[in-house]
Image: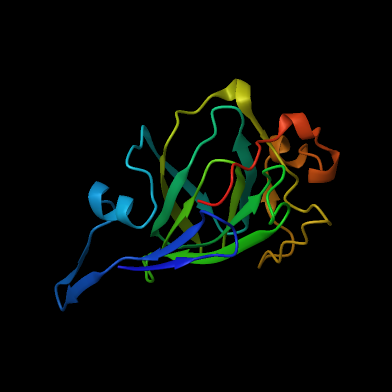
Length: 187
């Protein structure tokens, strides 16, 4: 597998090895030892699947405390996936990285705890799968506005469909710093 470190400390883009022929293909989406060797945690406690149609934007979500690291990929369709570093004291605080994930490219992204995460669907339908290092805790979940002008995320769709909950999220600059995770150094 090919692993690319991004400008955001701890965030990885992973292109797994795909073995294909005229019958189809095989790929390994998770192997504890191999992924730990490249910097992905050894323990995941919850797997989730989200199905969405074209133009849906989900995010930008995070939990703190009880932050979730996420290993994400697309099983069917295509999405533009985004992570934003919201760790107070991080040298990349407020910066984002986006990647196109699809059933065709098989790309995965590992997003460590302390990042806000979201994606928008660019195909007719997308089946999005993610492994989490922490269980979902509604009482610690919050988010950042997907269209925060300070972040200036280059979403590939102009008028996304966003849930009322996600529409209500404020700008990163408006969040109390004590509400945000704290950067613990290079990972």
